[in-house]
Image (cartoon, rainbow, N blue to C red):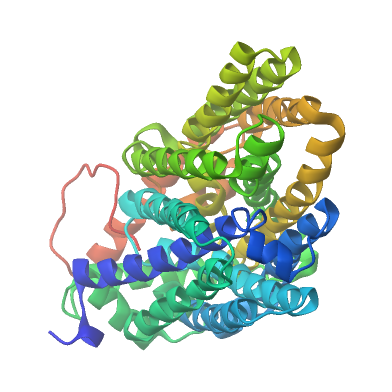
Length: 511
């Protein structure tokens, strides 16, 4: 079978591989600079930048990510999923080359911003593309797999930075890690053109023939198969129902109509606030610096410990693949917020006491942080916006969520070096309090989406917020499942298909 005619599992595997490479590059970029800040050749090349300059070099990348996500708000639907990813890869390739060849701070900062724009495009688009081309039962697992690959990229850069400590005065020790990201971007870009565009996006553009062809390839069925036609019919009907409310625009984004657009955009953005303002980048970006300046480790030992810590983060991120559909999004977020708050609180107390034993406990809980984060917010922050937003607003809602994400990253990476330097252990109390503050928001406002098709999620909000409705969200979920199953039965009967079973368990075949 030719690569550009992959079907079924092979096609889904190709899409997942492409998405995983894109997120591996994201993780690589997240970690590469933290290990270079103490590099002697890097320090000499850029005239031993101050702590403030260091934080600005790191955070300009984040400004680029914000810019890329903002642009994706306006280009996501016109360009489509595949073209948006290709554009992101183009920016990343150019950005990697600029950074690897830089000889001044201005040159480096431009490269960081350009790479950030590419990451902004890809982190907005990749989870949507994956979610819209897989079964409901696989959606959480596959996005969790992408996040495990993100951490693998982070692991790769940690060990690469450590390896180059053996040639500390050679410019290759920092130029090669920065240039390597261009190779990863090219690898992603080479796969994407051979894979299918999202059928949902094609339906949004009224390209129903192409959508049907892509559904058939994803299902590995004949184009005239009843399941292919049924899936297409449901997509078209759902989109038509949303269009009846008018074109999506900024006015609707900030108002709740029948589809509860504003509520859903806020839920997606909120998951990213929890992810980033919970303090993950205190650890992800700056762990070598934290271990060196707060705990007194040598630069090389700090890099070794950071690399080991990133490996256990990858392990827990991988374990999330097996629990995200079983326990659902909401329970895992509650678990993560509680655990992350505990880790920062104990670390602050340990550092505040200041004995050798208490410092050891503080280090242990900084390492334990990745267990709680890896099993919760790491994957859910990217998954939730791609499934909670409706068909018309998914691209816009996901982009707003990513803007929120990157603003959070920028805040944390900008204040961390200064915070550690000026208030020491008290800095970690901020994140202990913030994680605890997420708990009531998650408990009272978040909706469980595990096991629901994207069309069923749409129906849940219509049912729950219908006039005079007194249903709870769990009751609305059950009603949405029943309504969608009845709709499928009607579609099958009206097209002369064979009788189907009277009772159908959770339907997992909707793309």
